[in-house]
Image (tube, rainbow, N blue to C red; front, side):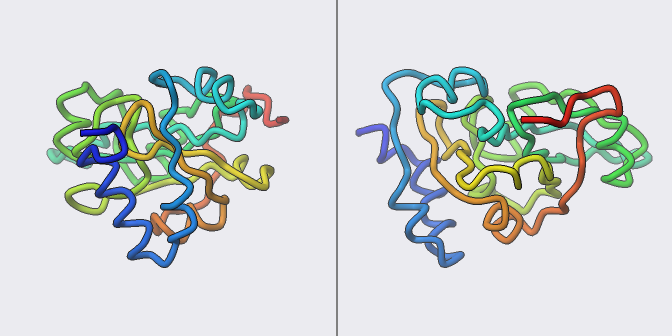
Length: 173
């Protein structure tokens, strides 16, 4: 099996095609090495780190229930969990362990795609990504990425546009 035939990448490509984004599905790139960080992905693609859409899965606590929260953030800064909790209407947002991420996305940390999960996940999309004509996101495997746009990420995920970094963060790219 080639990496492009990996089940997570296949699901991601199918989700893109189903959403009418065949060009993005056809643009999936398999890189030579795993790119589990925005910096590694940017270096492999020769783009600014801010043009990388980090797919970060968090544990969002709502009373006694815990649900996944996907934050698609610009690689240029960190998401603030207090801000994310407020945006998600959660009591608290915290780090998700690898088992939680795989359970809710079907994918491994470092390769989580915006879609192609077993069930829809509440998603927040960082407004800073709007500053890039092309945004690169993971395609379901740590060696895979695909080109898209900020507008298409919003449409694809049904995500909410928001500023996800704390006040102290630098929002320039």
